[in-house]
Length: 417
Image 1 (cartoon, rainbow, N blue to C red):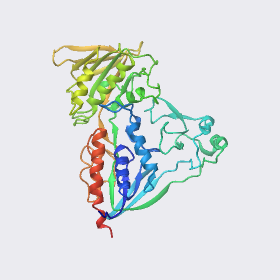
Image 2 (cartoon, rainbow, N blue to C red):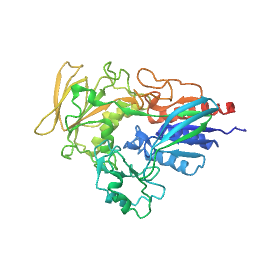
Image 3 (cartoon, rainbow, N blue to C red):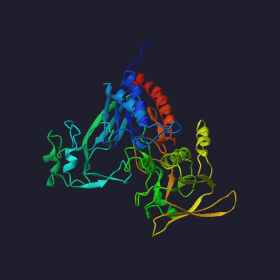
Image 4 (cartoon, rainbow, N blue to C red):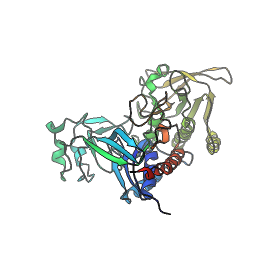
């Protein structure tokens, strides 16, 4: 079968965008993968394990990265965002704004620049649970494996210690932002999601106590390359957790916040229950929920998790969380709908299952029309939206959506002038 080759742009370097770009390239097409962060992988790279198999996400990501490395049809642009899209299917012009990395391709990853840097910043990768220097490697398995300088915290040439420390002339503080135009037959948008801002949940007092964290932060605590090297320790004093509360629908299914179900939170919390029990079999865990929504093979996963000793499910929405000022323990207040009893329990730590919100929610964008919640709809002809920027999805669903979008995008090749 003769397939006409084309050129494509994929916006977003998370699991959805990576899957789409690899499939396009392996059909023999040219594709540019655009990512706003300094490395590929998105939210998936920050996870500890996938559900329901409970395997590390880099099992899948490393395979994709190997396919990218071996395929000359894929061009990667990190620290880049799309500023404009014009044209029609088969003949789009995509304008990309690329921010400076301040570290060039001579970088060997020796880490000498980090050792010399005197300035610290909160780690984006660890959701501020740890710190990096102003020059840093995004994480241990970064792709591309190259350091980057945060120009918001770096004092620049007036310090210059990283320049003196680098033996390979890889530090270039004179790098400037650039604008690049790309031609594309079709565009696939996979801009992903962000956790709902838990500080908006004023009754839960997030941000006012050390041992109230979010589900994405819990992933980093459990991850071997996280701030505690996989040990589930509470942030205030690094104490081994004995009692943990999981608070479901923190912002989801609430007309004052996210009125929709975020689809994956219940199963993700069940997975995190397994993190706690694996780290400390004697730990007491309570899950406060409205409804436990798990689907398909995740029903078996729920049955498996329920077999843990010391696990309690409380059907009821949490009304309030407060802190004991002396011990830094958290008090969780909720009503058990099934019994009618009111609960006020003390825990070492509580985890909020914050919902999925589109990354570009509330922002002006040229990437398509957004609904009232910020999700992209069907878009204009030749521009396809996949993954969590389109609808809340787990990893396997994201990859399926990506494969389907690739087939649709390739149908645009015939319209090229």
